[in-house]
Image 1 (cartoon, rainbow, N blue to C red):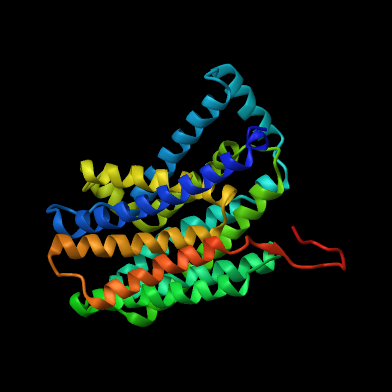
Image 2: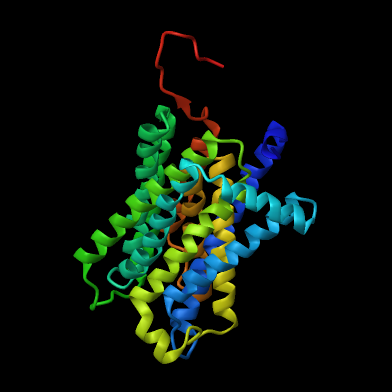
Length: 336
């Protein structure tokens, strides 16, 4: 109901704000995660517990959003949540699909990063943008203009150039298994693309549920699945060392960034689309790499600068073209 009352300008503000938040959040998350794993001394935290804690944090944020939607009334919020949960329809139950895929994706990414260099992972993971575009065309009946396809190509080339720069100056982990790592990251691309498009189809096909309620429904599936991932992957370690083993203030910041990112992604899916969300993530890769170069004083090469320009240019080319248009199914004039 709240979404239906939004004007076009307000929707554009939500769209722009969500993409900016995703870009900033992803940049901070990459840098802080690397810092917490490589620079900070001490025992490493269990990644599966971070995922679970971030889902619980996201659930808390979502409940706060529901409370604000009901003007701070706890009783009204309770009734609203109760009504939605008691009248779960098929599309609500289908949210278990993206919930499951997001949980699998998060755990696959940790596996991929243990078998690939960061540069190789980031380059390959950009294939999710192409996967998302194709799945949007298939599942959402959307098609890209020739300019938007060109923007996708420029994007991939630009990110590859940026990461080749990082690869030249980075260290190669001789313990990595490139074949398993590549298979893992390809699976992550597929799960990320399909989950994002599937969730977009659900939230845009039904305006009866608010975005906060959709996030609540998503969290109700994600929390049990993330708990299962902790049990499967790190049950022995949790029992032996404790759930919060290796945690410090930085770990809690990373948990909060994960939670905020999840909310921002849902807003971007609602008011923008998954491909634009992918562009925001790619811009963050350039930012994080550039900041890393400045912090580590490795310098910005011509390859990095040229690749950065291509990524920014691709984002502008994609954004300035006409939006997704549905495929023609009849002889009717569908022009604006």
